[in-house]
Image 1 (cartoon, rainbow, N blue to C red):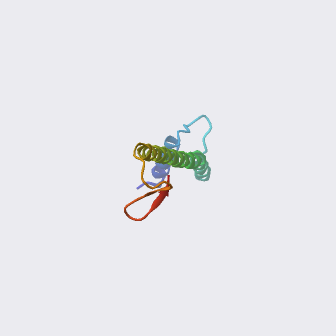
Image 2: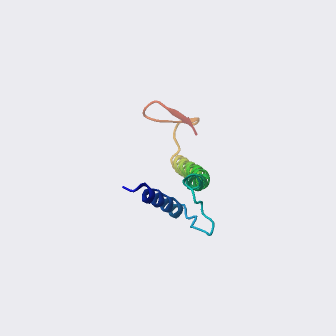
Image 3: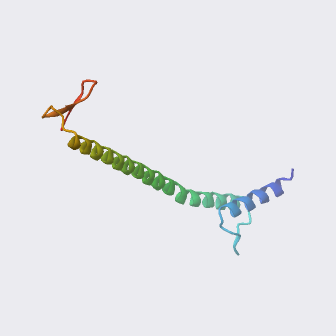
Length: 103
């Protein structure tokens, strides 16, 4: 394996994957290409990490709101059911497993 071709291939791969393009001014030395490659990858990560954090937080808020809406809907159904069928107990609703809930 020729090290020169391998380095050129790695340079091409990094430049292409980061969508930087080749441009008119490119580093000529191996150290320059390494520094430029590092800068390109860091540039992509600078955008990728905050985007990931925002996406996860939006998903969390969406799930919490969905759960709140479902819980609210369930509470309304239970209250409606209780209003239609008044219980002989005036202050609370008693369940078969011993838990009572204020009406």
